[in-house]
Image (cartoon, rainbow, N blue to C red; front, top):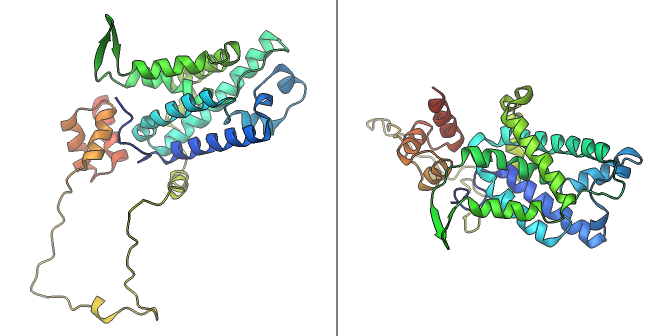
Length: 291
């Protein structure tokens, strides 16, 4: 099992979030302030530092947590491909904010001044385990020493490692993430219907790295800015206009939909209908399942 085609194809928001998380972690580590991040009772109820709260929402406190966290964020990009970048942006904001509120309430109930929750995007990561458990099918099963594992087991083990990485400091943020994912799943305040405007996904898409090996488009203008003579040709009146043909779906697009749990035949037909637009094809398949 994987998250679909490799790379961040159709997942620009996930890519930007991972880059931001890595930058915040490295920056706080260089400054030697990683141990100062995280929520404590004093930070929330005595001296509120919003910059520290923002940094704690992105930066991990150690290299192992960073590796496991970024790996799971990278895998969970499948959900952005499934629901689209605009809705996935709402999911990130909702799960992060809900998790922070839950952590604040937990600190108020515990009133343990020595407890400081570990920093990092735990809310988003563990909120993603709810749709991962409910929506992602098992594709392969293996047996090791008489114990049966599935391809999803490795994601669960990575999540368990992150959840228990700092014991109480990491368990509570993980539980708050589960709460946030459950509320989103239950469509709390009809949150699953909300989405950001189209320019949000367009903005993140423009942040993509240039494609390696891609040749730049050759300009059809000469140095003076005028069209070259060979670029303008008379239209042949006797030739009929070409009839646009239905494009054959890309194998990578089919693999993306198959990784979401759709069968190959339905995925191919939806892509033909959507003219190779994965997001549109996903909506077509989801609507057909709801009928």
